[in-house]
Length: 104
Image (cartoon, rainbow, N blue to C red; front, top):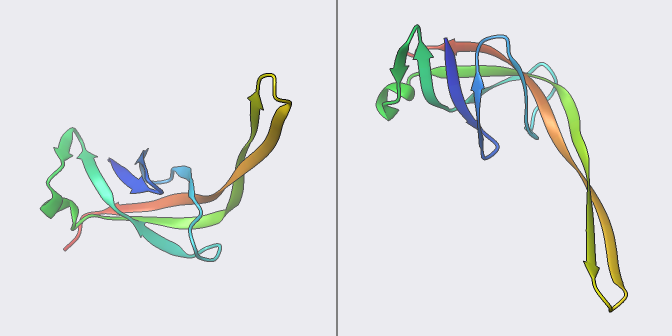
């Protein structure tokens, strides 16, 4: 069984036991939270109906904070002497999917 969930403006395919990186989530290490499911596949049976998906519960546990790769930004204009260098490193939260449970 796996699910497509929305987290941080992106969609990711997850199944129980997967460790994924999502945009920073408020919470302490070891706390759990729910991810909204967009699609659920169980033994070839695909569920996309929003009324049915509202009953599914995808839970995840926070493992810790991580950082993405360093991105170097360079702005340059020819013949004017303008050069600007900037860097960025996105912060992520590492989470482990603990369950995909059908609701009540």
